[in-house]
Every structure is written in structure tokens, then in C-alpha cells.
Length: 365
Image (tube, rainbow, N blue to C red; front, side, top):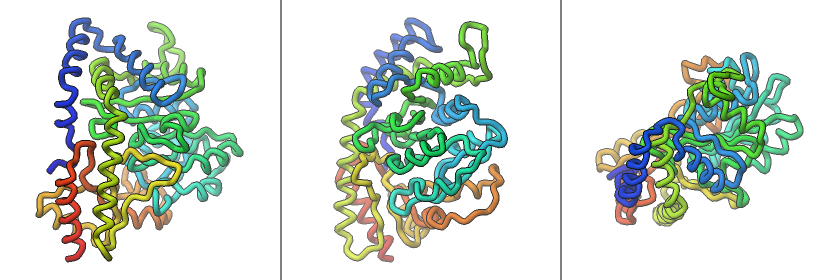
């Protein structure tokens, strides 16, 4: 059994991908070819914002967003301790300080009630993460940011296609950033990402940063990075975007079946994902919470059922970040108990029954 099945999706769209890639090979514009602009238009239209800047990775998208706001050494950026390293890594790369705020126990996203107390005169941005495919509670986060005149950067690496109060992820804040890593809900066949905004000036700055700070050929208005997406990845993503909304619906059906199957395990201590009433999750992962996680995971592996842990170590505990020791009790508990089950749009009910059966047996033992 596959944890994520990209092959079935590829079979569905392979002819279209091959045709699009052949067109790129024919015109030979492998960097910033016309397909890049076409992708940006399609993505911006999907999200419902004015501007999309397609870039080389989700990590670079976050870095570019921070650079666009002029974040530099000594500044502080508030974020969550429970995420992939890229979230804090880009802050540290600029010499800024990640300031961590604990998470909510049900959504695993940053707890808005704890943000205001973490704001200082050095705070230059708030960067929530939409973990596991569900948006953070921006209805509570944005008023706090507005009171303090602090921009909010949406780390939507796992939530492209999700919604909050009917609005699409990546269009909920000043800048939204996503990833097109192959395993993401909308993933390419290599690295890729994008920044989204309705602000004309920010869009110009981010586009310049993504091409070495260049505003015209051989004229560099600012320090930038080599953050361009390549044309082949752009055209692959166009092909995938055509079926993306259908795949989101399929993901939701898979998640609904999981919830029903897990609910049939009477008396077993398994916590299913909790989705906010105002949210649509794209279920980048289907993550449950259990006791004796490591033992359960080992027993499921023995039965041929793949699982994963996102994430076993808090960001402030990573040696690379060298943060002061602060307690994050909710996030710390999550690191010990979360486990992600196989999840993709083409997961069959028969396989889900096998997953849940193996889980139930392992938990019982």
C-alpha cells in the first residue's frame, strides 16, 4: 500500500502532461517561458487574488515574502513551534528571531489567544501555518495584527485549495505562500511554490526578489534570490490544476470514509481530525492522535500499512535554531501522539478498511 499515490494521478493526465511538455521542448524557453505566466494567471484566478508570483519552492516563497517586508537581523516573527523546519528556517536565514506560540489542541494550528502577548516592538510579521490542510483561525488572528499594524503571512504550504469562511487559502492575508512539492495537494514533479497578494507594490517587490532583485535586464533594484519556477514545472502544474478541484472533493470523500470507519471502533482512544465549522480542509495529511504511538506505528508497519509522523520534534528544539527553552505543552503532546495515515485522492475504500482494521488491532494490543 502506498502512503501517497502519485502514479494513479499521472495515468489520468499523462497524455496532457506529455503534450504540454513537448510544447516547452519545442519552443525551448525553459526559464520564464510563456507557461509560467499562464500558470500565474490560473492560480491567481483560482485563489481569487490579483497577483501570483510562481517561485522555485514553498520555502523560497516564505523567504521572498519576509524579504518583501524588509525583515532583517534582530527582527521578530511570530509563528508556530509545530511545523516543518522551513517555517522557522527562513526567519533564521534573514537573521531574524522566530518567536513561537503554542498551538490549539484540536486543529494543531497556532493558538490566536496567545499571539498578542508575544508581540513586542521588534515584531515585524505574524506567520501562521495551515497545518495538515486546514487554515488557521484568521478571523481571530487578523484583528490582532491590525491593532498592532503587523502584516500576516499565510504559510499555506499544506493548504492550497482549502477555504476559510468561503475564501480560498493563499488569499486570506497580506501575502499567502504555498508549496508545489510533489506530495502536496497540488504538487509538481519537482520543487515549486508561489506567493499571492492583492497588493500591487508587494507583488512588484516579490517578483523582483524572485529574479535576483532585477527590475529590468542587468539592473538590480534590491537584493534578491534565484527564486524562479522553471517552465517545465509550470506546465505540469497547469495540467494538474485542471483536475485539482475534483481531487479536493475526492480527498474529502476519503477523509469522510476514514471518519466513519474510525467512529466504528468503539471505545478505542483514537482522535480523528477536527475541522472547524467555517473551514474546508484539503487533508494534505489525515492525522490521528493516539496513545503509544510508536508501538502502534511499528505494529502497523509489520502488517504492511505505511504511516508517518508530522512532526516528531518541535522547531524550537531543533539544534539548528538554538532557541531558548520555552514550554509549549500542547505542541509537545502532539509530537508524541500524532500519526498520519495513507491519504490521497485515489485511496480505495477497501484499502482504508485495511488501514483502520490494522490500526484498531494495534491500538487494542
